[in-house]
Structure formats: C-alpha cells, structure tokens
Image (cartoon, rainbow, N blue to C red; front, side):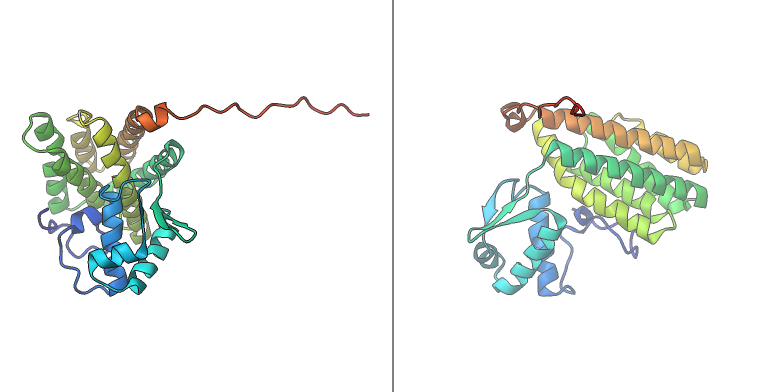
Length: 260
C-alpha cells in the first residue's frame, strides 16, 4: 500500500486505510484483533450481512477468544457488527438512511476543518502533497491508476487537510467519519465502478487553501462532499437489494379528534 507520507508522519490521527500493511507489534492483542476484524469489514472481506463466531475468528488469527470477544464488543459500539443470541455475530448492513446521515456528518466536519486550515494556513509541504493527490482523479480518468489508489488518495487528501486545521478533536472526528465512510465508498464502487470524481474538483480546493480563502475553501469542500453524498446515494439505490425491497404503506394519517 505504500508508506505514509512525511506530512502525516507523527500526526495522531491517520486513516485506517493508510495503516494497512504496517507493523502493529506495539499494539495489544485486543487492539490487533480489533484492527484486523474492522479492516475485513471495511474492505468488504466480511461483507454486510455475513455471519461469524468468536471461535472462527480466533482460529483465523491464531489467538485466544478473549481478545476477539473484547474486539467485537468495540465493533458493536462502532455499529459495525450485531450480536446474535447463541449464534455469533453478523456484519451490520449498509442502509440508505445511515449512509445519508454519515455523508451529512462528513460534510459538516470536513468543511469546517478545511475552513480552519485555510484560516490558520497550510504549510508548503502539505500543500505540495495535496497538489500531488489532486492529480490522481486525472490519472484515474486516463487509466494510469486504479480505483484502489484513487480511494487511498481521496482519503489521504482529507486527512492532510484535517491534520492542518489546528484542532485535534476536529481532526480526529474527520478521520473517524472518513474511516467509516470507506466501507460505503467501496460498496458504491462495486456497484458502479465507472463512477469517478470530476478531475478538477480537488485542485480547486488546493487553490483556495493556497490563497487562504476561508469562505472559498469551506464552499469548495462542502460542494465536493455533497456531490459525493448525492452520487453515493444514487448508486446504492441501484443495488438489487434495494430495488427488490418491499415498499411498505406509510402509517395512516388520522384526522384530528373532534372535541366532545
């Protein structure tokens, strides 16, 4: 997957995708199990609706069931798995409503982080890295890179901006929501692999950051996030599981009671 770029080295919040393949020997057993299982859910190795048990995962990772059980408790709190009574666990589904909520949260957080970064000023090394990453959609359109590299570049782009916002809690919130969004973006790419970002979209954001245009940066990031939100929801709505779902009658609207 490649090394983490120096502009993110040492920052406390790095997207999970950028950590894939890196040594995690410093982590405890529970954290290792959590990271491994979560990665399988996010990259769709464990797709939505798939079921498993503590025993099967412990056997797969050659560890005892205790750290697996503790890792699954964390994943339940994340909303990524659901416990089944006496039957193990199931990976939580991807729903249109939850995706809409997640994308809306991303819009709020990323736009605010970008505006804060523009106000504070982004360092030259970070701006240069953002400029490099902004060219990836052009390379994707030309067939020079694949979807995986494009996804990684987009996630790193947001992480670099978040790390420049000067607010550690906001940066963490951005990375957390982008980590969760990765699963949705991968699902959308499976349904519509031809979908892609407009080539000049990221470059416009870099230009506004370089100019320290606070309002312009906020608007450009917000427009990008909302464009992704619309595109993803449209793509997910094309899924056969959605198109074959039963349409339920809305609850009857009763007339107001007449006073006696």
